[in-house]
Length: 405
Image (cartoon, rainbow, N blue to C red; front, top):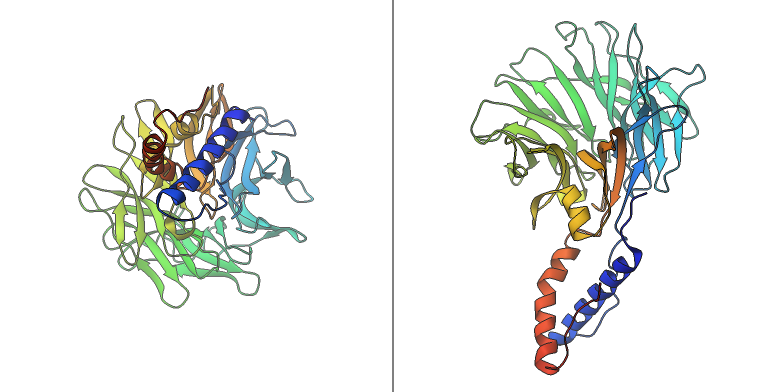
């Protein structure tokens, strides 16, 4: 585990409490108890059982469980895995020892979905606590292949793609939505395309599904509603027509992905009220960014962007825009990430305080989990501190406010 200095964090939290309570006095209010949010931390997800690499692909609503997989150069397959926030892990497999790839984790952490990787055919699966692994079959009529990418909050809806009678050939699929009661249901595609679609994520209630489909305009992100069917989300202005939805907020109101804009390949956040809005990219390198997941209400978006050093994980919120996550962890919160390269952020908890992703540490490919305070806490401190310092200096000119290193 890679953590910053404990005493420094305690002093920062104490300073935050003093600043906010002093602010209440400054503006005539009563001091209030303050919760400064979780203690910042960073941890690599360690592989086990002879594997030498790990990947993180999703996180539960509270951040208590992380979904991913383990693999390695000496073991020619991967195991779907689940980590707890304390770093302990478990491998999810069936009685025959078949190897499994990862797709998604439910908000309650009880269910994972992914793909059983085989030489003859790949098949979507769902693993649920108390039940184990269920293979989901495929859509009838095509070459047998299916893969699960996302799972609802309680684990009772799984989404992904499968060969079907309508998909035009190998490597062309149709989006599906699976439930224990109804099995695998085809979602079709957008009008005017060559029938190729994939569902990538689903809202907590299971009623909204997002992904990508061919359409009359090209490759287009879609939103499927249980009462409306599939609609296209368009794309960002400028450049050739392209958009791809990778994630949806737990409440189902925000969709994230990437699209081609006038600047290049750009991460976006979409909502019914705002439409598709570009999120920019990180400084340096070619203009390129992808959004992978969003917290409740779309307040925090995570993904990756190109920099001069290569791909880098980002965190985005409305007050601060897009920032490189490693810099936020090191500079803003004093964490030690020596030897780490954070390549991409793939998931975020419902409240935006736990982020998971993939990177390398001293040359080894590892998943990771980062915990940060609630979004906006640092901004509140920056805004409030000059006011409080000014107040203190006005009342007690001989006093200075500072923290000894």
